[in-house]
Image (cartoon, rainbow, N blue to C red; front, top):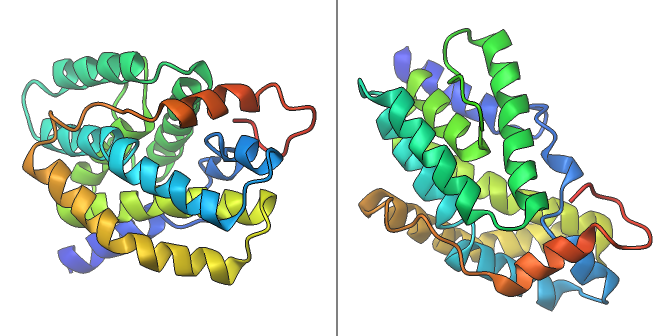
Length: 220
């Protein structure tokens, strides 16, 4: 029964109907769309995100938060991770998106499952996912796999809305990406501290430019 409940909670937290507001963000993809990007550019963006973007920083941070949630030094470690994520997210829109998603997720989790969400001054999304996952009884591997796929599907959902990409094409891209998602999770589990970096300068620039588009669908 405990395993069944953990699985149901995992499915709930990463369901598209779980209202944390991720649909309002494109992570800079909208700028690529405004410049004429389509399916080839989508594949390149997703590859970069998995290899050198959130496939490292977010999965590493969530893994470390999951581990910290079972420690007596949980509050201190989560504060350290929050400061590191602040420093890693050099583009203000990306940093504030992470905090905004985390804050909304934490508020919702406190309402649904009192006591599972940490009280952080800078509640980055990955830290809320990792800590709440541990306290909801979800093992770290399925948690990170679900988190990775949810981040990928967020990019793909944005692409369907702003690029000439169909829903079926987006699902095909997701299937292509799943081996790389699984490898990113293995990398995070093996050495999460080393994963705490990003190196996606082009995507960072596009994320910053997105706020200055003449018309836009997404907040960031």
